[in-house]
Image (tube, rainbow, N blue to C red; front, side, top):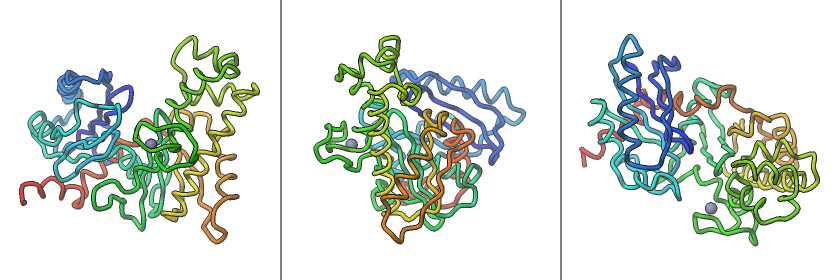
Length: 319
Ligand SMILES: [Zn+2]
């Protein structure tokens, strides 16, 4: 039976009804950061069900941008995102709302499963995912096993590895994290606090609306944005070098909105990583998803069909 996949993203909530890799229907709901979003998700799913021939749902997959407790089906921590969902039993909500058992997973892990099962790195057994966006999301697959660790934190905090000891404070409590140095939220801070950047084409864009990493890439011909872009590339490179040292991947999958300008990012990024890796380390291939908007829901569809993921459905009751 099809899987209902719900991807709680930064600006919108993506919904899909999938049969394996086939997307039978999909839609999005605006993320307002309030409990009312859950009701609107339920309404949107009702409409999606009517749009498909087979509206029966066998399993629900839920992805959230933070640390998850898979046994209890809750979001443990997300730092400024989805405060209303912290500690809430999302599995129980899904079961009650849609009448099907649910799995809850971190969004970067789900995206990694999507891309290594059905996407750009299909069949790869050793891969690292890095999503550059509002923050930096990461995940690791080692010998075909999704890395989770004893407390579900393993692999997903790659954006919170220190790349600059004297760097800015991060919202996680650490200092100089990769995402505190080079992410969308870091970019908005940098442009607001640096007169040269504020006076640049990037600063002009910031006065017209909210800027993202793509704006930095597109204005990199000007001196101040060029210097900042170079710093961001080195921060991402340093984080990926450490991820490669830790997890020894064959492939590094780089995703996020800025990767629509992948030609400007992947070559210098892989060059930095090649130059800084341990001498005998494997030099991984760098790829970017062809349809990044679907990485997470494809991964949820794959995860929902796996016995080890579905274990989480039952363990709480067994205890
Ligand atoms: Zn941090």
